[in-house]
Image (cartoon, rainbow, N blue to C red; front, side, top):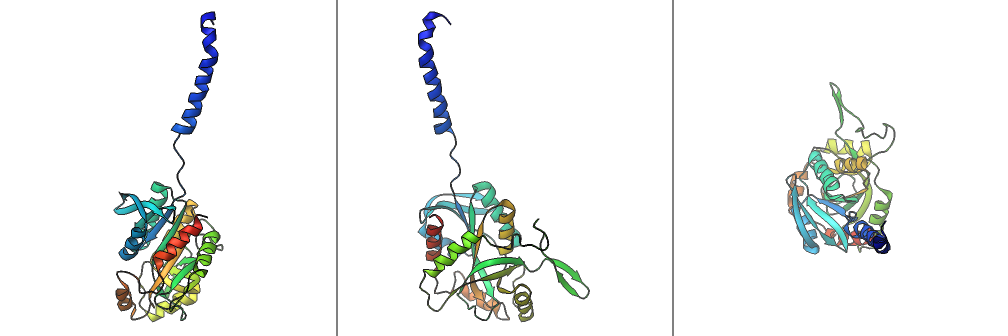
Amino acid sequence: MPISLMKFAAPLKVIAVCLTVFCTIVLKPYPAMARTGVIVALTGTAEKIRSAMHVTGTLHYSQREFIKGKLSDTDIILVRSPMGMINNAITTQVLIARFEVKRIISIAPAGGLADRVKIGDLIIARQVWQHDFGTMKPYGFIWGKTPDGSGSHSLGYQQMDKRMLAIARNTAGSITLSENHIHEGIVASGDTFIADNGKKEWIARKFDAIAVDMGSAAIAQVCYVNGIPCLVLRMITDKAGINARLDFAESLPSYRSAIDIGSYISLLLANISL
């Protein structure tokens, strides 16, 4: 190196190091925030949660509106999903793939199966099962476990995340209850609205379930294969018997419950972020 340039060598090295550090720290994209995806089924629930949020934007994918913002100082993506197993699976996969959420909370209606479960009660799902997967034989329906890669004799997507369950349980314990209560138990789901006493009794007996819905198993399975913890919360709108349709209709556009689901979700998110 010529003598005239040697005096610039050290400063040039310093500048190069500084540029490297700048590009690495400042220009490098920040990692995705630990967002929580919140899937709701009813418009009234979506509006209640949205009104409590600090909304920073909305995006549309797959015919759904995804609302970005903060609730209880937690970054969330709120979306209302259409009814049904496939619709809920689509919503869940978009949340995971597009928004890189780190956990998902699902809030939707359900029919009560157990006698102790009343309209307006909240269910925290300990396990979820798809009740309508199987084979129809001449002598009747033969149920089968939905394949999820976990083996036929082991729990896969059926078992809810233990940490999320513990947080939901502890949050429920801090709420003063009136005529409605919060239960923990098994939820069965399928692409059929149950309004039949015989089917209701079969589902309750087969899965030891206390509630039945139309989407929790799909959400749980998509979360399971993507390695994302999820929490399933179900508000009881009917008793899955002959009057289920009438009871369900009376619950719309929001829930008939003494439990403020919006306040519970806010408190739940605050505890999750701890």
